[in-house]
Image (cartoon, rainbow, N blue to C red; front, top):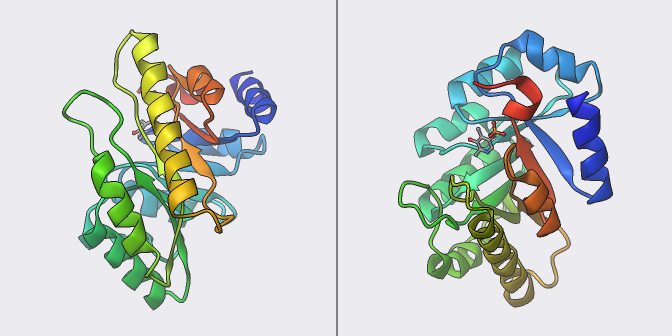
Length: 215
Ligand SMILES: *Cc1c(COP(=O)(O)O)cnc(C)c1O
């Protein structure tokens, strides 16, 4: 079974499996839940809110998609980790909404590693500035970085992009987060490239179609 195989692989690499359940119905999520999976990822706020409402409360919900400022309030009460923070205005909104809910929200900084144009994420040069600002906010915790490789069959290119993300993480750790144990996550790797990602230092893989079938 794919879940147990992926879990074993993650264990071997000391990484966490995020089951990406976007577009999939609650029954499918419950099948994995009943086998012990608790971390699920979604990329749309409305779908995330509906699933959170309907499903068991010990599920850890991960927001992995592009997030608009005006939608943060809907997920702020319960979200476990936001992987897709790529600008200061968004970060400040998350801080404000977290404060309103009396909690701290964990986030990852999405870094643009793909060479193709369409992907979201912060350009490397802007990142140190962004995380320096983040350190001044009391209700967000920057726990690491996230990236998506180019959609390509060229696995050498994908590996290179993951290596770049690992390098960005290492630089941030050294320059800014040396004294912060919570800065430890590298979210990279999907169904098609998770093995390469794990080999290159991923701590969280986000796997959808391998677990749930094609969308
Ligand atoms: C959909 C999605 C995934 C999972 O993709 P699969 O190829 O189905 O494993 C991972 N990360 C993000 C950001 C996604 O939007």
